Length: 247
Image (cartoon, rainbow, N blue to C red; front, side):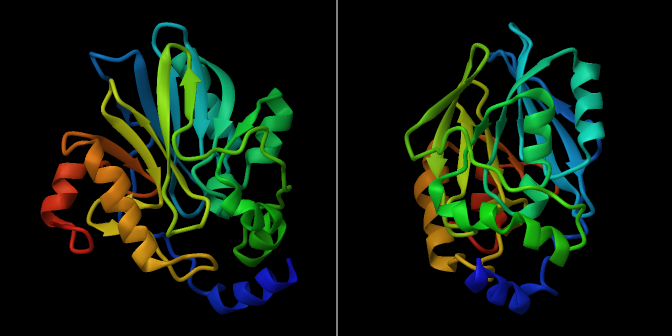
């Protein structure tokens, strides 16, 4: 962790929200899909307005929480409001605003931690340092119950999420995609009008661009996506107007 701490010093003033920091998402926004049992609800958490999301199966009422960065009470209040049961935690990557409350929530509800890819091990190991550096509440490191690889799948009730390894923002970043709902949960890979930062340890701009174009675009222009920050969009809209990855 020593090498990482040294690198953190170079980025201690740069942890503005990846993408458009002026853009936040309405608390409790939900989206319903007719052709899939999967539904989603977004809960902005932490001072970085990170889009924690709950993906749940309308048929079984089983749910997964994606990227619980903090504010556990807000997450659990939404779970209760929707009348669903959390069965797992899913992580797109291990930056503090996405993973800060993972260990506590896992211990509190005895939930398995699924993801990210092993490339983010060093980010998990440094969570305590991240919390101190960026003014987050103290948090614990953890060992994922299951690491994810490109081509894996995760079930939430009767819904299936395809897993895509999408490095560039972090080495171990993954994206979750439900084909029937045409919904992708993309963490900090892609935003409405922007892309993820690549100036943190392990980031690489060219790798990120390749992840977007090679992994996300083939899923279809009509795919809606939940980004790690800011409003939802579609891959088609970003291919038309996003200045970083437009065709």
